[in-house]
Image (cartoon, rainbow, N blue to C red; front, side):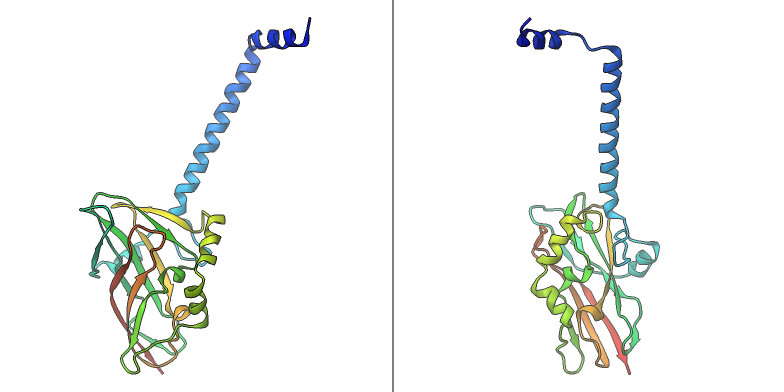
Length: 222
């Protein structure tokens, strides 16, 4: 018998029950692995980031933002879908050198989904934020803030390698994202005074051109 004939004979030979069971088991294991991977990907919305800031909104975050009114911004290409970014600080007054934490929620209004980018550290997505001091108005970026402003792509690229830490998230009427920003990391808040902040989110990876928060006020004391 020629080699070609032998090959054809093997192809025509029915698979044994043991072989079929092996194939079935392999298929089940493969599908299970896909399911686990899918669940892991969904957990991307709620895992803890390297900075210790969860993406899902905690009860404390929701309580802090419950009475905050924020402007609405239409999501491009839709008529009845809007995005809001309510924000507040975790205190109204801080001593010089204390960390000013801003709690921010990003949510949609309407029956729609919105793919939004979430970078680590969180401040990278907010380098366009507007801040003023009541006297001597301009507030400079820190060296770190300047670095984030000048080269955010360095951090975006890291997200592609760490999809469970940062990257694209799908927001909906049932899924919101909350983050805590350390404003001192972004701006030089060493000078005492009353500050007014409007968070502006960089959206180069999103559907919106810009999204802003309500105005937040806090005081730095000596």
